[in-house]
Image 1 (spheres, rainbow, N blue to C red):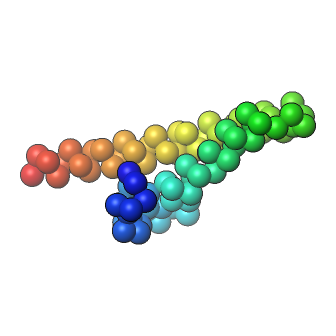
Image 2: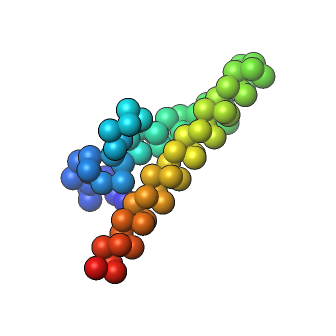
Length: 80
């Protein structure tokens, strides 16, 4: 989606659903930061790289889950 089409979207697929987890957009932005840091930083230690990689994997899984939930909700709306 484009930013121009967003109207806050807090109660859409990006919502934290009351579980204390960051919204989709926040998770995705953090994932982009991690990818950029891993790609462009020559001064990371192996441990730092692994830590960032593991955080990225968790974020990917969280984002994927949020997208699947949103897709399921859309499918239900279409069927109604």
